[in-house]
Image (tube, rainbow, N blue to C red; front, side):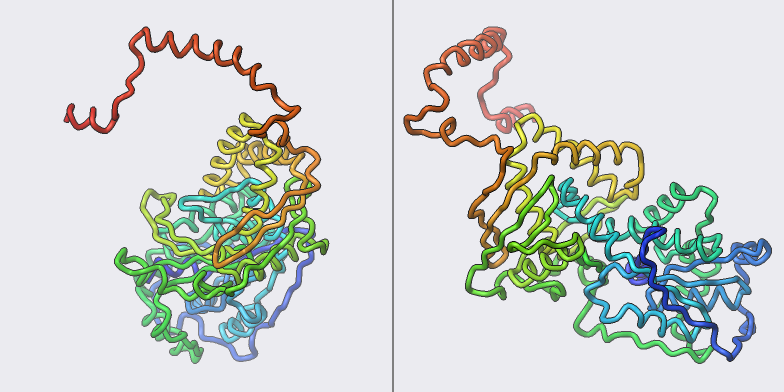
Length: 467
């Protein structure tokens, strides 16, 4: 139950000086009795009250959000709530969060971060920063944007503490707190679900519901009859985990795709799509120029309806445990595959090897909540340098979860020359000239053989004999 909390409770952020759309609600006229229910006092919260701290809470409008906001307010803590619009596909209207939080007597601000997360997604795609099992890290990317955007919004409104709903067992606690620490070392962080007092008071949903009901605040829990797993979503993708998915005997197909369909349910007719890339960034789809946000939105639609981007992984968590996830990322999967065809054309063998090393580092850093670390920035900068010649127009065919290459044109920096690669007679590389290269290469090979360094038997068979 706790494992699912971090995912439903904290939504998202936006960068300072960006378009900030704030939907705010004043505290309701009716006053709520302060700690009249005799709840045990939290030493951490007492400290905030004594210091006059203002706590900014990352909220989603869910059960955890309401419980924490109300509990802190009744403890005498000055509270402001924030939620981020990062294009959540499972959210019909982000402003509903404001309405859901209003009965708790708190002011809620919605921060528009859709452009920010689209730009972050572009960087992730350029870096091919996939984690265990090909996971496009929609949650990790979302936390980068959310933590940064909401923290900056909180500072502008006079907050001194950021409160997140991550549990003490997952990755999000590390991400939220590390990002807060590196952005502003003096900004405090409060984790309700690591506060011993709140953990004792609210061991589960039942206690939270009873608490809200005691204060005449309603909350409707969506029926779990059909959906028995926790979901976290943003415009980059969607991740499902926990509950029934924790059993390895449960099929990944219990998940109902939100951003698309299973491959078997995709159209019977293939769909052709064209992508134009400039310096590793998609600037047009099917001939229409678009902003990064529109590119992600359109790629999600196209990839989703063709059954792309559904994957399964047993990922290695930051704390060392394993976590099972079923993921959706139709747009990032589609854009990543299309860009790969351009990279294959313009990167030489050693650049490709360097790219893979840098990509792996960036992927790990995003997952670990270290996107702003020096080594991450250096690696990303190097990848953008490698992507400088990545210009080209790629046409692909999509069919039931598959991406088929059709053509690559307008790629001026391509290293592929048909004459050099042809198996037929051509004006390209003279096959006879390879003789000298092979003779030089043979010197080393023969030396290793003479020195007894070569073993051409089965490695597995040899290991079994030793055992």
